[in-house]
Image (cartoon, rainbow, N blue to C red):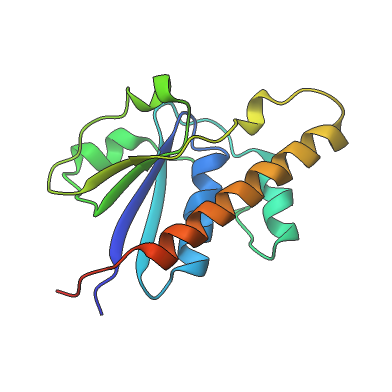
Length: 146
């Protein structure tokens, strides 16, 4: 069966895009194959690793990747989905092929302030929003077979 390819893009590939990739691969494994990348790859956010582990998904070995790696390689995706703010999403490069470009805006966990527990709580909220959005997308997207 054909699986649609998805690339999730955000600024640093350290939080939102990593969570979206993990959920798409975990929940949509029959229909989708996801990867993620950043405009300026950073360091994997340890709070994101922690909240994903709470939900039974281990992303601790993931490495942030550059979106240009995929673009220069001529990779084609069925969907390129930006998960950062609108201004950053506009900087996302154009990919070859007929793929759809979507934008799902989520708050950036790296920008959260407060105590560790307050940042964890807000990161969990973002995680839950991403999981719900990915779940809806999987349920409502028809993947054509080749």
